[in-house]
Image 1 (cartoon, rainbow, N blue to C red):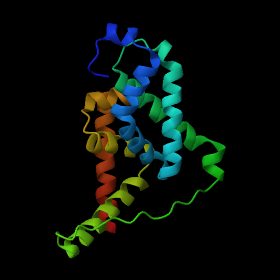
Image 2 (cartoon, one colour):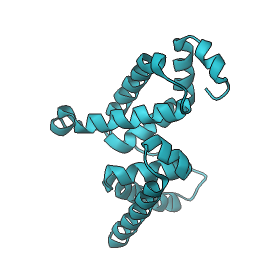
Image 3 (cartoon, rainbow, N blue to C red):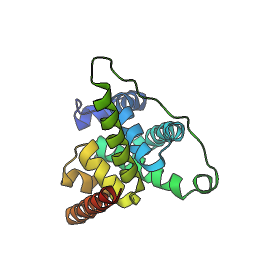
Length: 178
């Protein structure tokens, strides 16, 4: 969506805008939602719902922020709403393990060790409270600046920095303990 000016974007049909948003950010939104729900089928469903919500809300978009920031806010709020829902609290969906393929050219032993370390870090991040998990995700996986994270989460930059610092401290303690 970055290739259009605000005036051009206002003149495009909503279907075109949504198609571009889905192409540009669909995978990113799915990964963001996974940080909240930890279940791929549910994350895929929520991602579809987020884009439907976005489509319905397009007529009210004021271009006060970037469309990406707006979409991230919708995704985060929708994910948090899901976590508060009766369904999320009372229905437990299981997901089959997804096995990683090992490239034959690489040292298998090194890949296994790296995979174990990655899994340990992922478990530690998933164990964090949502307010810390989301800043870790946006900072390190989405590589957003403190200002961008503050805009997306609608927080002060100092609050984002504090949450990031506390999240890192918590991760360090958890990983040292394990």
